[in-house]
Length: 239
Image (cartoon, rainbow, N blue to C red; front, side, top):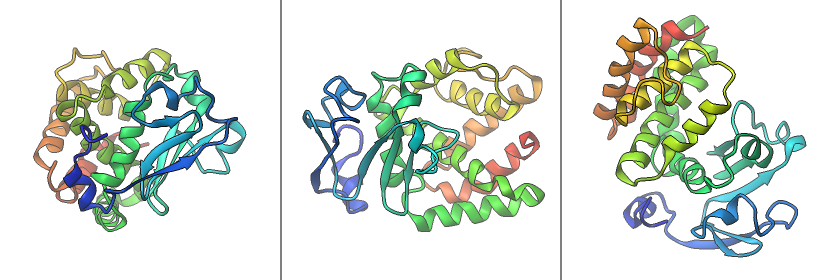
């Protein structure tokens, strides 16, 4: 979608040309997740993607094989493939939100982290701060780049990212303090009422979330510089 990622964005990351990837009928019937947005459909069984982005729609038994855990979608930076769990999409009531979900995953390749080099820079700076909890470096990096990317999509491109989190919150059976901090950052970034997305209400979160939101805005153009500061902010929330 040129109104989400501009031609300049795509050219910067060698993604300007477009091709069509076939999708097996079993995974992409006419009323499927991807068919809910005309932006991605060229016919009943094809998905329009960039030259370097492919989409794989998987079923429950394939989630472990594709190493999809703790989420319903991911992008593999190694081969630029977006993996989506149809089972989890349906369970969370997200069938009509293909646009924000796919824009988010492709956005990791276009903007944050953008490429493996930038990912390595962010990873190294976060890992240095976490010390004894460095095993959670990947998760912290993901939260940080998600915040950067989602704020851009929601505010600048009017992609309904907030609606995805509203629905996840309705399905939630409880969350950690870290998730509460993460959601409260979004509520502040997007001027939403406290708790609408599941933001935490503790005094600590209410004090730390504005700092997190500020970090996202200040370092939006240079994510690696803000990575260590974000890691220091969330460190007390790691278990």
